[in-house]
Length: 321
Picture 1: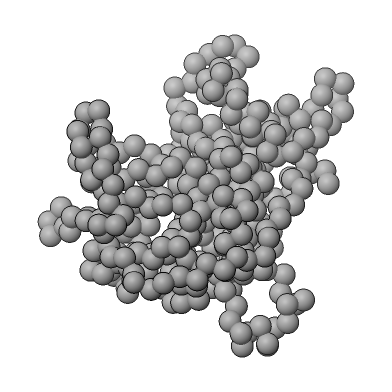
Picture 2: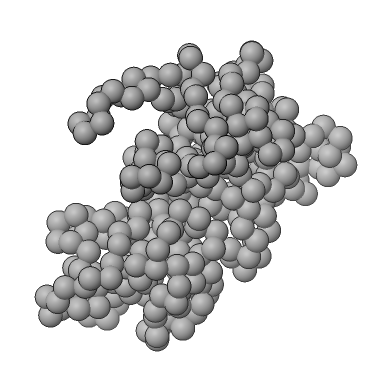
């Protein structure tokens, strides 16, 4: 890259890794906890965030991100107007975190937040005086972010430019200065926040059977309903969306028992069952040719959380409470 700036880790975050084909490399390790990425405009915050969110995939030699490695469970959370029928930016972000918690705490261990609705991050004192708590259904993340980590083990990486209040709850602050990562000297106050409780998962039920297909990477049709997946930025290829569609059809089919009655089970149970089938029998086991034993060459495996996210974006899906 012409005039590119090589990434250099702050010394206290630098770790050594020994790779089987490359040897010893050194790089920055982001620890568990609450990490803020701060900095002025055009200084590298979004560049670092983009690299982290795509670190769930391997990269080809020469890509430049070969050694950017992120846990496979890392989920990007962003404002997503219209993800559900009544979703605003803040409600969509709250719903995205809740759906990840519902999917299973064993697999949801860290999330990255960017492109955020400000009223989801924080409500300052003057706004709290203007709008009373009983008139605001969304609890700002700042009051829950520590309990998400302490009680549920979910770490956070937040890209923030103007919410200084998060310095009070952060464990680590990485400041991007002209694309150089530096540690902030600001000391953090880690007072615990109110305990965070998850709700009971909703029940999944069978819906009407009509045409289902993947139209492109971030647009699918399920049971005749167009489903916008543009908020799922970690989906990178239509082959993943194609398997998501067939997985949803599979989940719909197993939601009905042999005698025609509806078999109700939680979303978490359904998707974990799906992943067990993938692990044991391969991706084709839930595909459109599963009954004939045919091989499907145009599948790529999405993560379970992306199947959950697609399901939660189907408007009018039948459910049992």
